[in-house]
Image 1 (cartoon, rainbow, N blue to C red):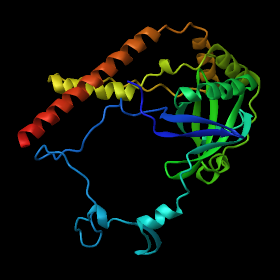
Image 2 (cartoon, rainbow, N blue to C red):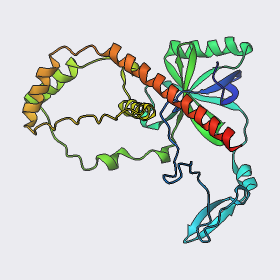
Image 3 (spheres, rainbow, N blue to C red):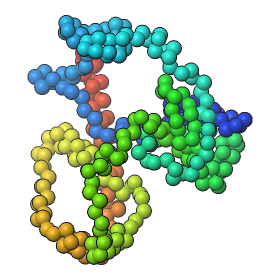
Image 4 (cartoon, rainbow, N blue to C red):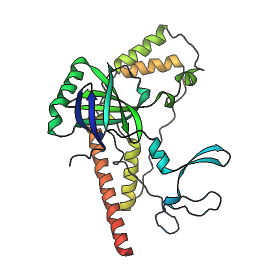
Length: 299
């Protein structure tokens, strides 16, 4: 089944306008998710907004936005006022400039999306834009009203489509200077620097997300599966704490270990990941069946 587009509009470059569709580039739907349960009754707990002073539940129609101006003092904004203040939805992703792909610091990256032509009529114009960007090795900076906000988007060519990243605004990104202000200016040279460079050279590789293991998700899926099957839960053994040794000695040991060939664990990792995914899907399906049975019984 094809994914559902979360936004549709036009990619506009000068006088060229191409119908495009946005698709989510990342999802958390495959993660093991939980509900909050009442320990005493076993029933699911649902959240509810209550009045801070009276403790009474507040229905959705009576919930409005308020900006705090002082202690328990608020400027109240009606939904109509908020809607009028939000920029219009012109459904246009307007390219303002083309830049080098490496020009944008990754701290500004927000969320990834896939950008594809919206319908056969858009295929040729889309291909022209994609191939032009790919040939020149550039990214496009564009603006659009997305999800009720004006967003800046970085667009890059990838495969047969385009990848778009919404960007954080400058005021949303914290200054690195504050985080790094207390780091002393140390000069590293001699054997220490040589060993560090040797370790880096020996471990140089390529980025492959298929190699990443989500050990937390794997452990959660196994825990849920064990509870469903009534098996005893095995507590993983903690690694023994390593002894604190001299920095230079640590570099030497690391350099020696780096000279040894790394074990090939790719196949095992992929098998574990596939097993975990299937287990999570089975767990989710079993949960849906139990929920459906509970609703039938309640009705």
